[in-house]
Image (cartoon, rainbow, N blue to C red; front, side):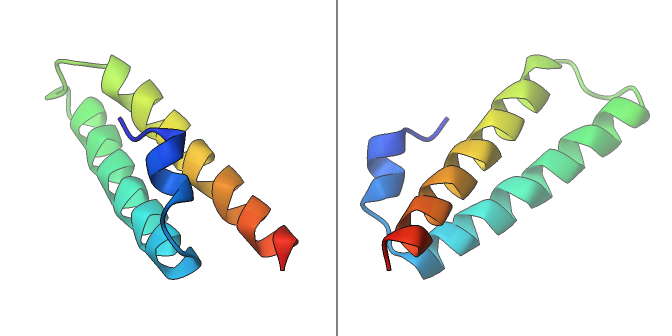
Length: 65
């Protein structure tokens, strides 16, 4: 789980990379769930929230420009 303070220290390009990697991880978790290989279903919720957190901070940085 990434903290908001850690994300705020990154620049926009690093935040975009973070969002992409989190989306890939979330997709992998969804595929594991679909094939019933996922043991920890709470991981879906945490990755979804991490994506939202990163996107929110990215939007704040872009709006500040």
